[in-house]
Image 1 (cartoon, one colour):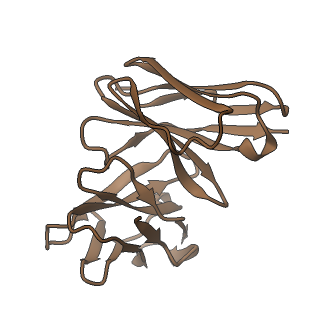
Image 2 (tube, each protein chain N blue to C red; image 1 turned 90 degrees about the vertical axis):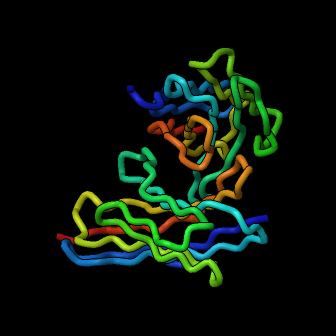
Length: 114
Length: 113
């Protein structure tokens, strides 16, 4: 069974600064996908970024980028130029290729301080 | 598109009562998922449907929980009888084809007294 671990329950960052959220996972599969989801106080979860395991290049979406280290089974999220609207819970998630079940980490609560 | 629509947004009920949560997925999506979120257990997959057919309900905690999807635009999650430990936020999510990229509703916060 896959597991996803987010070791930082809470983090804070000053507005306009950069912050990195950590995620590690455990799997025996070679083909899989990783995601970061954001859950703001409004509760609705929103996909932030996705990474295919077969791609060596790290995914980037505007101010959001990942550091994917397949051998280390690490998948961190970097948020640059943090904005107040980035305040949210962030969940790392894993899914094996051909699977239908996302495995979520417990989340990291990020607070952006003005 | 309006996104995934869930109702009610908040529900407070007493132990033993029946609770029905509703979900309207995004039009055209062929997968629908029900998740439960609690502080202790995080996000748990309860059940998912493909083309209105339940595929995997192994996450449904007990026989008190049931889910239906009578058509492509509507699903329900029912708890009967409800218990205080069922208190949680219940999310519905849908997607087309690739199940990793889910579109979530705003959730239904259930409190059972």
